[in-house]
Image 1: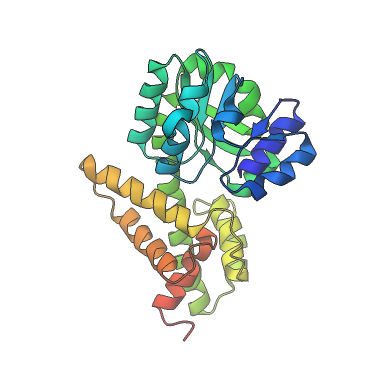
Image 2: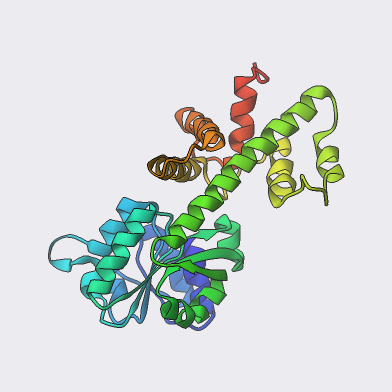
Length: 284
């Protein structure tokens, strides 16, 4: 996703410097006039805004706080600049990062996204931003290139909104898979049923997109099972700490754990269909 996001920013006329932990993944960006940096600190040098798009909370903290003399991004960025963390990270991680940034006079936004690789490619991401309201307003020329953005509260609120998104997505994918397996096992045409439900209360982008792809056996990753598992587990742990029972989310977490344990973590999260078929002995 980060490659597409960087490309779109460069194509929109922004001066972009990029760094990736796997250097080869950043190489294609050179053709779009993007300079490739040797470290996160080098990429951030002289920048008005720095975007972090890595896999999880620990990876995000590692880039932001760094190690040794380099000091991470917070050690390189100047006062009044803006740090935008677009990774999906725990709420408490985002809140702590926001506090550390504020102490150094750096504006902070946790702005995770929904839409997967297609959304990043097409500039159609849903961006949920928490943090400094003025920084959010000032960053609109950046966010507008990548998708539709909404400010949802203080630092950590963006990550909280993303967890809500992942709960809805993961649980709905599981529900759609169950319904379409029922239809298929009962002898109806699942693709015809998807069409029949269009426009009704049961309709959704997940039914139309993921449902059709499940039936077709297309599990090419947009949002991977291993990422869905991470986010679902994080949401469940947060719910537990707040005294909230989340039985549907627990069931979805079990499904994605099964997929990861069966070596299918790299498949799209619509592969919930595969786990339910396996559990029902439908592929025996």
